[in-house]
Image 1 (tube, rainbow, N blue to C red):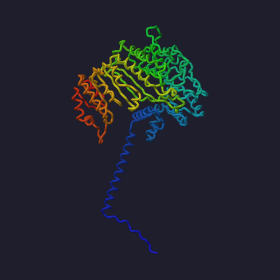
Image 2 (tube, rainbow, N blue to C red):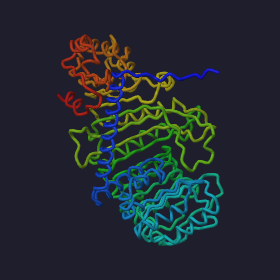
Image 3 (tube, helix red, strand yellow):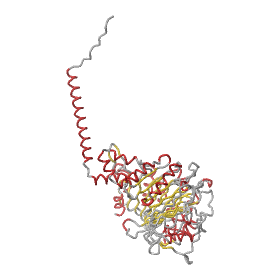
Amino acid sequence: MATLRRRPFALSSDDIRANMGWLSYSSLSLVSKHLVVLRLVRMATRIPKECLSRILLDARQDVVGLKRCYRGEWIGLSHVCRYWRSVALATPDLWSYITLPGDQLVDIDFLKTCLARSKGRLVDIDVSGQDIPDDVQAALMEIITLSAERIRAFRLLTLAMFAAHPLDCRMPNLVKLSFTRRWRVDLPEFEPTVDQFPRLKDLQLRGDMCPWQWHLSTFTSLTHLQFDGCCRQTYTKETFLDILDTCPRLQSLTLKNSLPLGLGLIVEDAPHRVVSLPALHSLTIWDRSVNIAPSIVHIDWPSTCIVKVIICYSSAFEVDEYDEVDLAPTLISHVLRRWEGGGFHSIGCVFLDIAESEVMEGDYEEDSDSERQGGWSLSVGAKQPHSQRSASSHSLTINLVPDVEVPDNGPPDCVACNTLLLHVLSTISSCGPICLHISVSRMEDREFFALGLKWDDVLQRFPQIERLEVQGNCIDLLLDDLGVIPGADPNCPDLKRVVVHFPSTSDRRMIRALKTCVSLREAVGKRFQTVVLVAPRMIRNRRVVTPEEFFSKQYVAWIGSFVDNVHCVHQNSIREIASCVEN
């Protein structure tokens, strides 16, 4: 049988020289990359211990700032090399923030390791799990009890473990405490003992909690207080004021659906109890107007305090007695009168933001899968312009949000929402603001039309404004209402400066609406002094598109023929926009 012989693969001398050259280049490239890696490793091992310790601490702080953080995201930095690990182990502060995500991820050994490596430092413990196994609960509470004197901050998402393992140990160094008690769950009510937290400064309670049953000494040293959805069926306004009266150093106060149930009456002239909070710099109240009104009149805050009032309106098909449409402007008027000067003249700018409302679900909600109705969130803010701000500047924000926590009530009532909004705008417009900023975000055109809000109704409440800045969807309809209709009085007759933010793509409707608006205003003698065209930051052919390229020369020339000055800027150039408007 004939033997088959393989013919050797033949390479020419030129191919051999070419392959040898490629192999030589590849080897040199690998050697150079290896040298770069070695150089980086040497640089990493040459970082001074103090600097490397600061780098690790900053990296851990960035991870802790995330909404959900797990220990492996920052501990991996200690595995770069032996030197980095030795520095990490020699930095006690690196192990002083302990996060236990909960459920089956609670690592008791990790908790013990962090407590040992922190070497006696005060620690922050964050337990965010809801369904922790019983054996893990017992071990966790045993460690908490043994380390009570070392705990600086303690956050616990569920109090179920307190049934078998009560938290009754004294924590002399505890500064921040955050508890969440889920609704409709058979959990024990937590009530601290007298002098259990003598140095407590930050208290955050969410869910089915009853802090008004606590001893008043618990609130004495507080600087930050937050009640979110706390049970308010069993306490009165006097108890609420007693708690505030024991917090003279309070700097931040947040009350969300936690005010005493009220009758919606504001009687400013009648004698009433007033609690003074001289150190308060931030006040946030989220509730129905009938509950806000009788409580806020008893709080005295400094003129520099930043106030945010969030008024919930009903999600029923009809306006119910809890909305109290006529009460909203009275409530806002009372807040404005509390500012320094005793009047409304200190407000310079009004911001109106219309957005699709996000469903607010707290961590304590058990039935998170239940169907909930969305709605619209309308935010009205008022503050002094940048050029007039000082240490005593004021800031006020009023939000109107639908009550989406009760799905049986049906979709939000647009009539109630718009009525409340127009009442609030009428009250704020009496302050004489000269600037109006309108933004429509996270909302499609059809959703805005479903809201039933008319720009003409909004603009008619601000006849005195001199500057208008608009951005978002459905702004073309607003520009149409700025145009002058023959035989009708123009909206905003004193308007001189207009800033228009264009979307990421060229909007034909907005381009056409602005052309019509400036031409009609010029025809009746209401010519704009300055128009600023704000272009989005776009990248085309690997470079940023300039505003002059985004707007055609013909369009800019057309606008310029009907106004005194026209400028084209980028949307991120805030200083440039302000300079164009003021000049």
